[in-house]
Image (cartoon, rainbow, N blue to C red; front, side, top):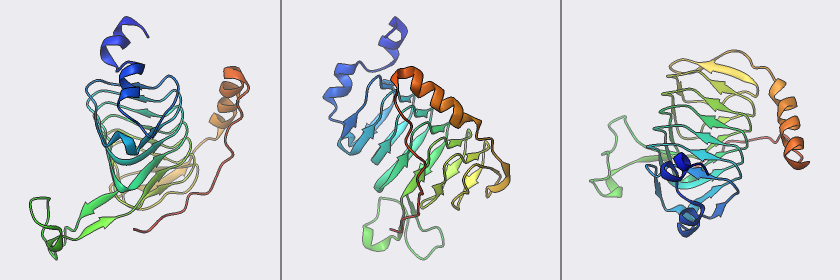
Length: 207
């Protein structure tokens, strides 16, 4: 680590003492990030979590994943998966659970659970998914491999692979280039002959 990294990010020894479910190589996590229940958090190689983020619940982060400043990933028990080479830009919020806003139940954690109605569903980001700054993601959204979302969007439904989405609510606007798959191969081979994980189908999971 550089001297700047030594002051900005937790040391390897500090990270290991937190008791993560899995901690890959060369992981950087800002000292200003709040991580709740790290025993439920798995982080792959070369991933970075930057300043003022909040990570909470059952969270699985792949390799070469970037979570930018001010992101909030509220995974709950349902979980959030961020697969390899995925990323969140500044101020993205992902919810795997949410109160009922219809008025049919009370809201917020100050009241007992029997008076509340919580929507719970796993969120998954496939490989090479990127979500633009200020975007909000609702429970149950599955981002297929290579899909991307423009800044300040609201994502309520799952996406198609290699498509670009934008808006409130987010809608598909065009196809996305797949050239990054070639660049991924070059990067992994230069790193030491590591083969990329084949694309896999991500299916929604209902709470």
